[in-house]
Image (cartoon, rainbow over all chains, first blue to last red; front, side, top):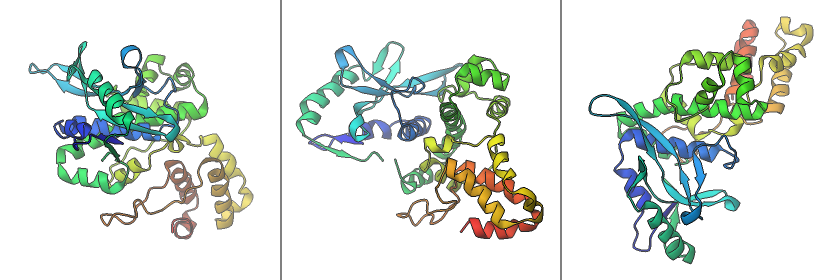
Length: 133
Length: 196
């Protein structure tokens, strides 16, 4: 599911639209695999992680894509779209997209922003939820 | 993205997306299937490695959708470890799309050769005569344990892009393939009877 703010901002969709096709497919396929997975807490499930400490209450989707440096050397791009997992209703509400670069994140405040959306808007019933397309 | 129509619209937008989608099917779809098969069989990585003649590290990577460098040789060894078949073949996008939208852990329930063979043995002497009722009973026996979904069904009722597709679970289709090939005289009868 995608979260859309009161002023109709769908941050996950905005993030998705500007990604290249390799990232779009990897994201779509990862979501499909998770949808087909019965127990997201199983230790073999690497595509999902519950965040702790400062960002408790949030979860991240985890996937990588193959990329190459300008000199041709291959490397992995790592992505961490953030959202709220609701195991009782078996759904995951995507709040925004995020890429991990070394120890940093793009956007750098992604998790703080996601936490703000969760506590100040989503949990207050503000905004809307739509099926992720 | 949960429906065939939504996937198909994405496939129509870009050839690059289609290429990447095929790559993901191999790089992510096969590891997911290995993972679910391990779960259903109760196999640890070590056990599958031993049965496959691979190292635990290779099995770990083979079950990791992010690894991205899975080789056919590894896939063949993993199939041997599970004692199941593997079919790598070229297909139209509609078939891949149908498979993707129906992806589930159930699709990881693949009967081993031994389990199939036990079902075959229920035919008794009549199998040499091409007795369709015995064949149907054998299929039913395997299906009861693995999957009760119909062999052919509407992929997405809300789409006019594709109205019908072969999206049978691979385990059932594999069993049917064995049975069909086992009875050359009965091929058309079996197809007509089992694939509406």
